[in-house]
Length: 429
Ligand SMILES: [Mn+2]
Image (cartoon, rainbow, N blue to C red; front, side):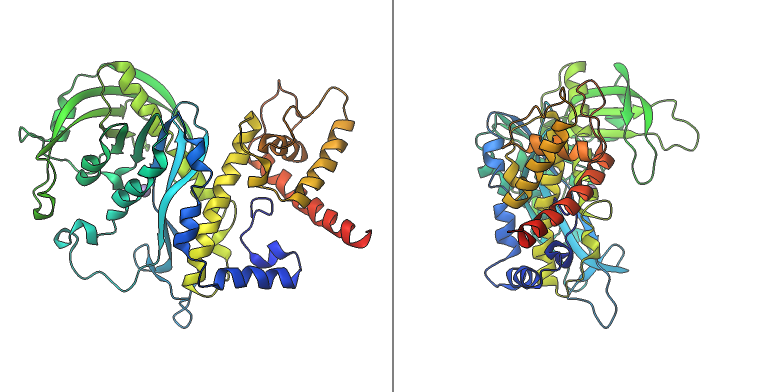
């Protein structure tokens, strides 16, 4: 999937009907379950997190599949109920200091059954879909025992009191963006309190482009302080502490252009924040959340085109999503491997593809005496160097590293060459 940039089983089989049948048999096998595939996500992550401060970043994405009233493919509703598909909620491990993608930890993949009739507030937390934020973080704990520190990180959807109460202990921390104005222990409100904090610093940061906005420089004003967050008044939360000591870091954009919605993040964290530097560090960590958005983009239309899958049953689609998630993470690791790194080449390429890469590397190196692939052949970085060159990157250490488009072009070219390579073996034994 990584090398072929698709989840389409027919395309992956490259006309080999027997192989396509084997793929379908694998997905259809009752011993192959989405849960078991999700468990396997973390096999290489556990070693990668050792000794690091890990940002455990979680988010949910809806994956839309085409259906008709006659052919629902067993899929429940997503969005406002006008579409059908699957929900994916992964927890991604990222190095807090250098931003390198360490792999997937835990997660959930599901499709909804029927409609909710009980109102949100009357349901117990365990019954709500929002329980996924807590159970996913808890499931990752045993995988993170060798990390130096862990910060569970999420957007406004993860503004959940029980998550703060569950995530903050020993070397585990939490950062979430506030969604609700909450009561503090002294009965004042969180937003009143943060508005009353003195602005202590200003800084300009580069905001990457999103679907709804283009990239821009944002001038930010910083506020922070310790707070004591009161437990919400819900009969389902009585087992949790009456209040939690947290810090709020408030960054808001000043002088935003006309027609631009000013950025305003109120970040709640269990990390100690006692200086301006501490507070900016929390903002810096929160900014790393973009990598999980990149992960979802790679999975969907811009990358593996998961939504184009024609597989007819929900059961098999859930398994396909679980496999594709791993492929999307390896794609990010391949992109990052242009800067070196320790991932082995076998996470993304099989032996026949490595043979093709070896031949291509020889050809590339023969083109210029001074330009040699600087990475060991067993590493993903070695493959990334070749793929970047195939996509048009000149390979000089002094020039800009290859970007995602260059990699996309390089992978497409490589995919065609690798297909030809396997024919060559077949036709000229
Ligand atoms: Mn979200």
